[in-house]
Image (cartoon, rainbow, N blue to C red):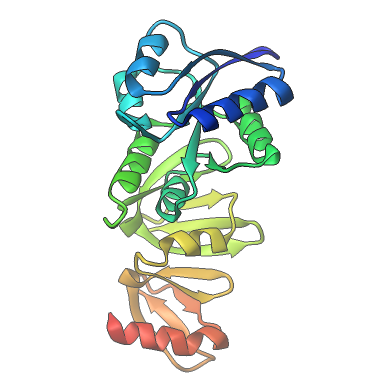
Length: 250
């Protein structure tokens, strides 16, 4: 894309539509708004003939969802900035799918960061969008997959295939059942938060373990876990009591 970008806004709230439109016009002059829509149908009619560089897409629309629009337009190549209301389930869904978003009400910094990322990002994989759609539409269902952003690609993994995660400052390494390793540029805390209700236990400042693979807890030598593959994982003193309680429920 050139220094100038085209954009299109899909938003069914008139005030939110006007605010986003004004903010783009006043503060992001490198973006030219080529159209606006307040429904799936109107947006689809426009986008079938003309694709913007950046698509601002509200998730919940009066006649459907942003996902319905993406299904109507499978060949859409626009960079997508999802716009969503402040909802805990939606935020968790975006984290699982590793897709960026902005929350309403947003700040000028939020919008600026989202636009900056969108200019540099690759179009989300269909499987990422599928993870996001399922997580948003079925918030009470246990999620089965998570998207991991490495330095050069996006990898979709089954959550049950993750043995454990290890912290390395601001990076996290995922150790998989098939003995592969995946390095991701997000903190262990980030993943501990989204995986905590899916059988993962933070047993140490540096380790997050999938309880499915715990073989036994050894009390000697300060306490450590032995996994099914005989890998030993240290358990911190602070986490010991919590771990023992959790293990009794498995």
